[in-house]
Image 1 (cartoon, protein in one colour):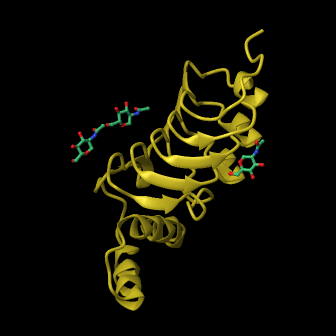
Image 2: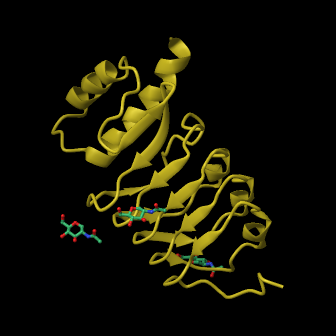
Length: 167
Ligand SMILES: *[C@@H]1O[C@H](CO)[C@@H](O)[C@H](O)[C@H]1NC(C)=O
Ligand SMILES: *[C@@H]1O[C@H](CO)[C@@H](O)[C@H](O)[C@H]1NC(C)=O
Ligand SMILES: *[C@@H]1O[C@H](CO)[C@@H](O)[C@H](O)[C@H]1NC(C)=O
């Protein structure tokens, strides 16, 4: 049970960051404590498989935030993450490489900046990667070319340097 509760606690911390409307941190924290005792059930953009969070779909939800505290280490069973059409800013943390079960990742239409971390090369199951309409700069990491499952990439509308990826 403990092993199940721990990731969920982090997960709901994340959800809390997304949906913060509480006046008091203390009230919110006690609510989260209670929530953390729930088994994972399909709920509010969250889908579960075998009690583990499998899909996170928070598109067009006016979310203002960063990926800084995303619980990459605990949500390792995620296969689908869609955070498109929000106000996420800041960098893509290197820990993104821990989400090795990801099949589809959509971060498009946000304010994510800086470079795409080379750790993306750990996402061996990734088939779809959409991150168009952000503030990314630097070069497209050549590591993207190592992703054998990748069939759909959208990087347009950023400040990325075009590299000889496809040779
Ligand atoms: C996002 O949500 C707003 C308000 O609900 C809606 O008007 C708009 O069409 C949605 N945008 C997209 C791209 O789905
Ligand atoms: C993410 O959600 C948007 C809005 O529902 C949808 O248009 C888009 O196809 C989704 N992205 C992926 C990779 O499935
Ligand atoms: C990307 O932009 C950031 C500021 O947002 C800057 O600090 C960084 O040097 C830029 N990197 C490249 C490779 O242009």
